[in-house]
Image (tube, helix red, strand yellow):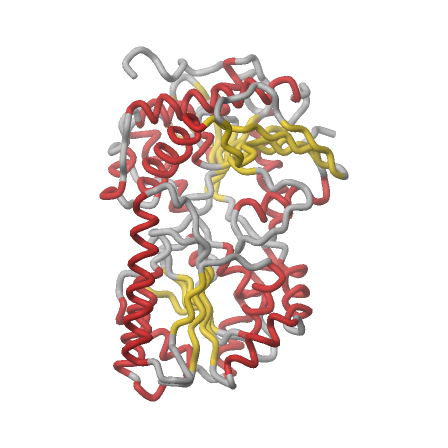
Length: 474
């Protein structure tokens, strides 16, 4: 049986506490938990100079291979290009795109360097699964090194429209790099349409039947495969976590008030300032809700090297202070704002206590927090999910209260409806969403991707590498 090899920017090391709220790292842990395999990527450590010697740890059925990046590589590949250029572009935040040609060269160089580090660990029959925008050229680099086996790519962010992608310098080169993969998985049908539009309009490619396409002299396939969670396991964990010490402390602190919860990385795509403003609108327009709820926003710091994230932190602190100063009393504040991480188990207990889950990104590939919130609910007394219509999860969780994340008044009205919603309607909305999560778990996502990769590889000739990126015009 072919071995699974996963490539991602960060590797969840064995024994590391899963303190993050959902996200790629948790999903990949679930994907490797049963079948085993090899997980390769950055160690997260920054060294004074790059090294050709990776760290190798084996735990159970999984081998973890990680590489340290030099300060220069981390700055150019991760901070400047991946998060300063690609991240805002993929989320349609064009005003925040900061492009430097030197950073693009660094991004290509790190992909080439890491591909060379992985090569000695590969077997001829491996299924290689590359993840996310950090590694768009990684498959191409493996092809240049002679890897002919099946390589797939999954993008966890949205895929931009043709008009947005063309803002990126060397966008055609990046699009061509994607054709080195046998199969490309995207989160939603909207992303697939955007990708195929780019193939036709930028690459002059041809769309074929069954998700296949031809471009740059190669044939590959693309499909929508929304990522799921381990639904039943998470529901059970939430039921148990409801009795944890942390959940008891939170419940006691609420003093019978309803809990509104938001859990996100501190990121400008998540729409957190609009939520704080919506709390202001809720309390201004419906004063009867004063003292009747507490809004807990958990937002661990991330990417502190990027100036926009530091500015966002200052903005949130200022808005939370203003709203609490305006409406708070000596024994109650409407917003509880925490910049720290909690374990998945603790969060599961918090979700189960909540009357409202508030998930309002401006744009998101999927958003697993929305799915975890639904899975964590008590079937007899479920809470209400308020969800941005621009999150990928909205295509599956359409029984949520869907909102436009830039419309503060609409979010405030949804909060009012959620706080007032009768039990019968809450159950009626929750049941089909939970059924959807049961029908599309992280295991279904994994097996669906790998089956599609095998099928795409079986239907294609041995892949040839596209023209090399990083030519003299850079």
